[in-house]
Amino acid sequence: MGDEPGEDLLVVGRIVRPHGIRGAVIVRVESDWPERFSEGAVLLLERAPGRRESVTVASATPHKGDMLVYLTGVADRDMAEKLKGRLLSVRACDAAPLAEGEYWAHDLVGMHVVEEDGRPLGEVQDFLCRPAQDLLVVSEEGGEEYQVPFVEEFVKCVDATARVITLRVIDGMVP
Image (cartoon, rainbow, N blue to C red; front, side):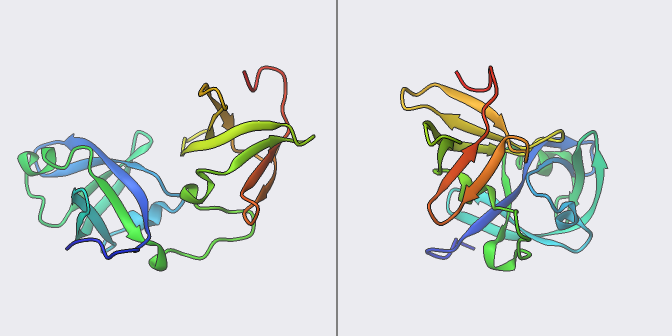
């Protein structure tokens, strides 16, 4: 199945490596909803750029901060090895609605970052989901990158309409 033109996809995980001999894979979850990997869940597996196919989760369990996932049709280690590095996605229209104060990571990328006094700090290049806290990867105009914890203590405002994130900066946070 190819991607539909203009179809918005949300990445929910990346296959890190095979696990064992029965086709299991370790998935780095990139979603706040680990239930996306519940038994019977249907995900889109990236087979090649622009080409995805539906796969069904046979089972999944937490494993050292990631998920140990069995996908229907992946029967052995050789098949699982070929999936290393592949993305698992869902269609944006199938995603759960966001609560107030929640954002899709892909919507934050490209936003301008400013200090509380309005001084520009750069642009969001990436959003990293980490077990301890999520991180904004911000690039200054000169190209230097730094990371900022995406927590209420530092992120004072996300204006989705103006595409601006306002930060409270502390010593050592930005170069």
